[in-house]
Length: 172
Image 1 (cartoon, rainbow, N blue to C red):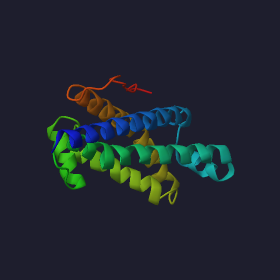
Image 2: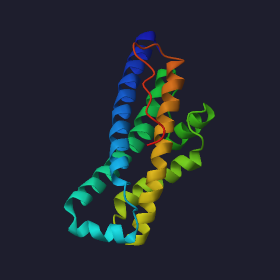
Image 3: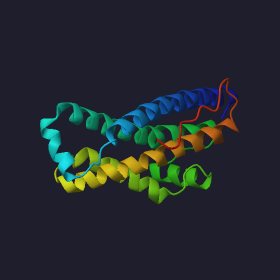
Image 4: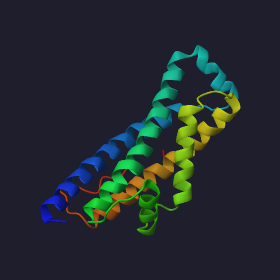
């Protein structure tokens, strides 16, 4: 890989890192607002009659999915390219990220991805199950933020950039 291509990949990575940071900030804000209440089956059933609450939930689900997608499908492959490595399949990239110490567990990451799919595709089919999934996603927000911060710190040690690291708060 030539130096120009490597520099271009690093710029793309830094741009994606900033996008994920902004996604994380928005997710943390929505998470804090949404989980002020106890989310259970009764809460889920109220959504039909509470437009504001339903919109807040939609924002959370969307932001959760977006951050998870951007981290796994874009940021990690971009980081690998910026390190002059060839990205592979999603699973290969996650395994490499785990080996680099960027993810605590590929299995845990895949669980979060499955949770994201459950939130999007099984949206409120069963109020109790959906409430459980929402509460699991609330816990997983901390994992997404921690993964972002770990990737940010790792990259900071390898790529020179004007302002870094710009970390997200781990607890919300």
